[in-house]
Length: 254
Image (cartoon, rainbow, N blue to C red; front, side):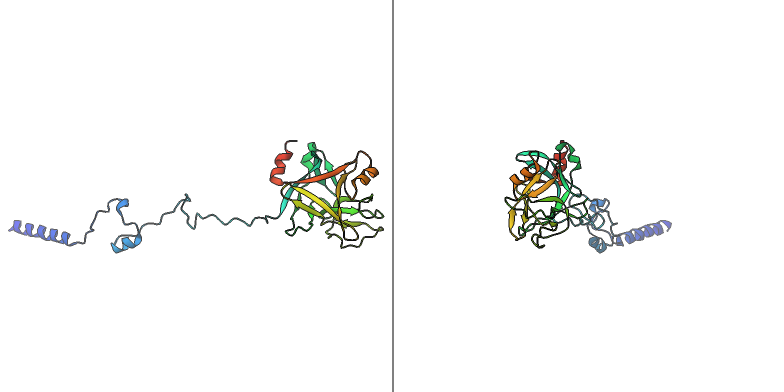
């Protein structure tokens, strides 16, 4: 009788076990588990734990996404240094404080950084720098000097000036006269070229000249300038703009 009861109990227990719901396949390894939480819910399995993804190539999460780059400066703005050439020879670099001079190549560390935005319509523009009482590098004609022109000894010292458009101030020989928006830029060769506007609003072919001390001027007649300042003067000179990233390398060789 006892044996019969025991066999009956075991048979009932086995029947209960087989009655339990069983998965259709083995999920003993993580690799065999359903790939999505939707599949897991359909099979009465626990949800997958969240996984922090690395910033590897091809994966991005809200935690690993890089922040947007800060706005860059306008591509039209140029910043750098100006090399001064006499013909094919570089004689130095531009240095501007209150007035502007040529400093020799071996002192290029002291060159002045300038900045400008070429006009999209080709109009003359300002060149700015720090260190003077005014922001722009322009020209100042002294009182009683007269107009810059061919055959004239009149000159404009290159120096710190206020913002002045060409020809907007009536010229008189009794007062100083300044212009700042006189520069043009040729990106193919890096040349910065001045064009002076006289009292009649005519554009004058303008030469960059230096006196014996290296002080820089604008003139409408290179021969007249040399006659006034002597054979130790230099010019016509040319300004060659070097963007900052290249200028540092070029200047380091001196």
